[in-house]
Each structure stands twice: as C-alpha cells, then as structure tokens.
Image (tube, rainbow, N blue to C red; front, top):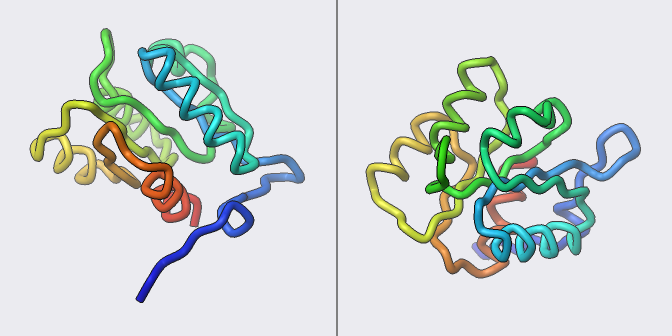
Length: 135
C-alpha cells in the first residue's frame, strides 16, 4: 500500500495558529534549507544554532516537533533529547545527520525519536517523518 502525504494533510493548527516546528542545527545552510521547507508546509518555524540556545529560549513549551542535527558542538542532538525527556517533555524529535551510525539510530529510537534521517535526504522523507510525528 502506498503512503502519500500532502501539505494539506500534514498541516496542524494549534489554538488557531500554525504548529511550531523548532530546528536545531549548527550548520546555517542546513537550518535555512529546513526552515524554508517547513515554512512551505504551513508551519511556524523557530531556528536555533545549538541545543543550548534552544534550551535557553524556553521554546520547548510551544514546539510541536523538534528537528535536530545529531552532531553539534556542545550538546549533541541525543544529549538534547535526553535533556528534554529527563524534564518530562515528550515533544517528538526527528534527527538529521551526515554521520549516521546504527548505535546512534538505536539510541535515538530507544528514547522515543520520531525519525532518523541521513543527510542528504529528500523532502518526502522528512514530510513522512513529520506526518508520523504530528499524529
């Protein structure tokens, strides 16, 4: 059976406003490209260059889904996920990485990741992950 996702199906509205998707990636080009795609799907986007910046922003309370790089200076994406889970946040997390390993993938999913994508990935893969995460 084929699974097709369109922007209309995927878009989620929270309290009359577009859902907020937060992006954490130390690579400005990657952050910008992801933000453009997420905006084109009708979401509101918040971008951060580090896990620490995201944590300090207090943005977790309004974030409906978090897309984070795996390998970053300071806290990694896995560290960020653990930090959020240890504080009771169950926000869906989608990992993107240029350096995937089975160990990291297993750890991410063991802690409840909604997706784990290897860079470069096509937009359909990310949209499918978002659809599962936002259900």
